[in-house]
Amino acid sequence: MLQTPAYLLIVLDTVAFPLFGKKSAPAPLAAKAPARPPGNPEQSRLAAGSAPQEFAHTHDPNSFNNRSKIEVQEASHGIPDAVEQAAMLYSVDQPEVASGILETSVRSDDLGRYAQRAWGMLFELYQIEGRRQDFDQLAVEFAAKFETSPPTWTADEPSAAVAPKAPASRSFVKIAGLLDAKAEATLKQALTIAEKNPSVRLDVAKVTAIEDAGCALMLTVLRQLKRARKECVLVGADKLAVLLAKSISSGEREREQTWLLLLDLYQYLGDQEAFEDAAVNYAITFEVSPPSFEVTKRSPKANEPDMEAEGDDDSGCMLEGIITAATDGAFAAIRAEAENTADVIVDVSQLRRMDFVAATNLMNLVSTLNVEKKTVRLVKASHLLTALWEVIGLDSVARIELRKA
Image (cartoon, rainbow, N blue to C red; front, side):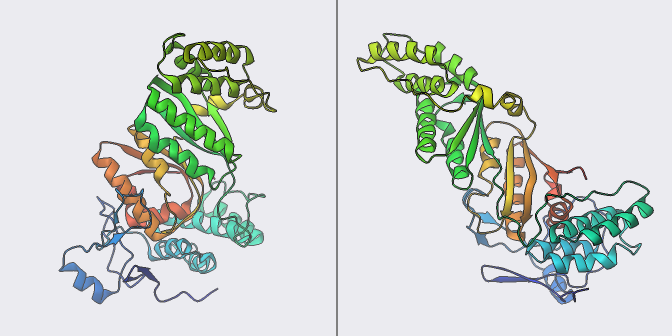
């Protein structure tokens, strides 16, 4: 087993926080304040008599009103040292050291109600490290100890050595209610996603009203994605087309951007007859030549039969890949989703790792949304992420739901 470091330093700007120092007996898990990594006894004694410190961190402009603050104060969360240390070590990409700590602790009986959390973390670390034989042996011990089925090995899970920095899964943003100029931030998020993904899903199934300014913004984004050769899957395009068609009249020279967006939607849907009728009416109304229908290779209705159903999925937005302090705009999708709903659901099933600073930025954002009377649910979370979030106190401001084993 690898030697466990006496402490780990997380350096934030010019402030260093020693972690994993000896702590006093943990208090019960009552209402928790945002936590910092535990310090050594002398630092804890000094910190107890002083006010919480703050410092500005600006790597992620979308985390907390363009200026995220980390509140530093003593934690009293009752999380076992081994669980806390392993969570923090993995957050800084040291899975081998983290698993070494847990290998001893899971076989002891002093983890209390965190026992299954620790076992779950070790299973995930073995999966990440590609240690199939150790995983299978642990599964036998788990079944005997807890008298329940253990997690199963995922054959296609990449090992830590070859894990991609961000999966190439389709990401999406959603617009609901009024499509107007205020949708700019949400629509720009589609462009941000497209920078690191081959495709973007834009859900407009819940749009109930439109303004010409909003149509202009959406049209601009769709054309930018097209020029960048990025696939854009429009959920609810047919419903939006009906709404747009009802808002315009032939001969009335207004809402030109609405006309143009409608033509783009007909083009996307492959509805040539509707496109040509609208094109003629547009040409007459604005005294221009009618645009031409372009035959495309894909038919969204044929190739995306379940996309409408996916648009009604509980997961409103997604976090994925590896998120660190340097990941710009990491939580912009959450902020954008909060503009459309009071119950923000974040799918974290594809989120592999998050570091301490990013986790604290996330907590700051969630705390801000709480003040705005909005709730946040992080669904399909791993044991490793859940442990990190419990260490900093994120579970006191957001609901965290574990993914199924």
